[in-house]
Image 1 (spheres, rainbow, N blue to C red):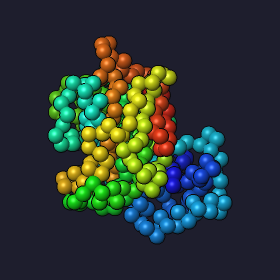
Image 2: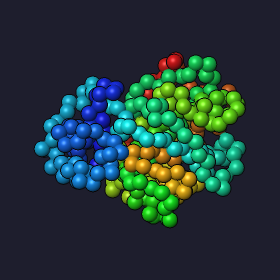
Image 3: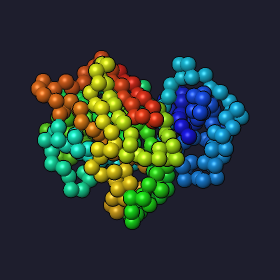
Length: 286
């Protein structure tokens, strides 16, 4: 299923994109798309039944309708740094022996076509297309990658916007370059795990002002999705509605020759993951 949330910010309603590409209203069946829904098998069964007979669901007019983040009330966003071989190479970093972790606050999340704000004082705002993993079952101390994949509710496109000077040159942790407002566009859809048989076979692409910058595949991940979820479960409990951003392939501004083409107000970033949808953001000054 392709689940999404539509409407003005803070007042989104749950919706479903059916097999014909028609947008349908789910608000008569569920109150929202969040961790509570993902952990509620009877409620999910009702949604699946409605998806199998979409004529029973009201049609929504998609024209001019904002698409919000596909998940409400996100618990935490755990991010994996340097998780693609080619990205580590382009930035001159050693291949990590274990996953590198940092966090993004849930309030960085915006819709897939919402404005991204360049922080005040920023000189090095960068782009990163990423596969987001959404947890559907509580995960703690998992034994295997195969078991871990059974705790995944679905997948989405994430844009891990980053300010490199704040992240690398200002001391402390990476978090200060990752948590500026609007720095995690998510969506358009939450695609349930049954529609993604192999999360290690997904092409990812990103364009800036129409120029292709990133063209990678999740097959290049150093730590695959199942291993990432298993690993994290030994350091923290993952709950339904938690999100994991799993890293970005080569092609970011940080990895390019000087002068590096960092983002500025007026730039347009577009990104997509095959089968998971497409995003588009115009940048403005904060």
